[in-house]
Image (cartoon, rainbow, N blue to C red; front, top):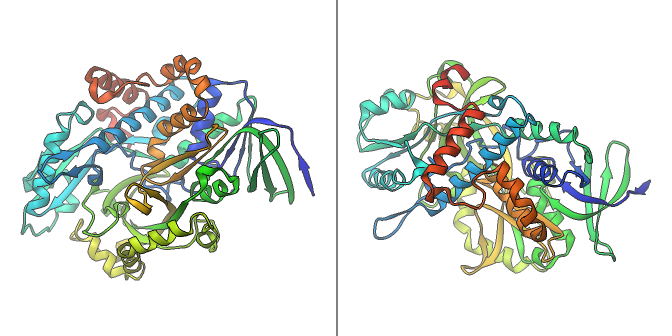
Length: 501
């Protein structure tokens, strides 16, 4: 059984943080547009945005060492850290607007203050961290960052990590109290709860997108499998956004647009050790990032995270890389194989040849025993006991593979928007920092796909995001004002930290 639906203005594929953000922006900018959302699962935010599938760091480049590179002359390049931080500030401004407008409530349910720290061992790494601190602390975006290589101070900052630690080489850490822990699953549900109350927006669950084709009159026709009623539907739209996490690549390929060619994807699964002993978990309150081992990919940077999940303090350590050919946690074992097409075959083969070391690393990670994982954890918590920790599988991430100036089959680490030349369809590919930069990324989609509307939308965008169009790093007064207003609205004031736990 099948039926055809009337044309709509916008179709959003996937009910994760990206579609939730784009839908929320569009409803503020053009409330009279009709929007339909299709999600293959039974509720919003259950795949990549789910709290257990997402690192929840609130990526602001405060502690992630892979966002700052050391040049051969010893100088530290913080360009990427500045970009990521500014993007997170944009997200905070939009969330604050939604809270102030009573569109979402109780921000402390999805975002909380949490110190962000970087921790290193060894003379060379300590030297790098000190230079990184000196460079970053001169930028207003990173105001308030502290550095110490004093073991007594470290015992105050990270008592669980310092207890019974044998200090045989230099160690150091940086700390900044303006970091956050974000539950993107909860935020996604809040956004969709608001959207479902909006006129002209319809959210459809248990609907799988089977195909996307261009009609003779230039519209996009989306073939939907309605699992609930076991029927096929066809919906047409002027604009389609593919925000289906790892599933976006297959759907992008179905569009046939030239921009979808010579793009592949490599799935990586993440695993975390979760502390099941509340007495241990409560001794640590921070997100602490270390340095990735030599030869390890950027997504493998080890970190010990306090997470607040279901009003309970949890402690997670990882990630340990895993491998599954699935592009989604709830996907198919044939996902990787079916993503290889004639146009991307050479790209994919080139990537395989160039990333033999990554393949070797993933195999080593997959076959690790629990005790081997515990040994890595003990580099952070010397006293860690095996019985206090369980292994959980996080979400699937699909890293983009494409031909670049660096050569064919280059593995990309980050988030990437792919759109048609006429702006009628766009897809989001990639992974971290992903969710944390959702608002900036969705603004990029609007700028690319609706350039003729941006000028008229700009006043409203600036009302929602006061720093829109400006460089925060070059405007200390503006960044301080943004911090002050968003922290107040999102209830992130440091003095209230203890009360919120």
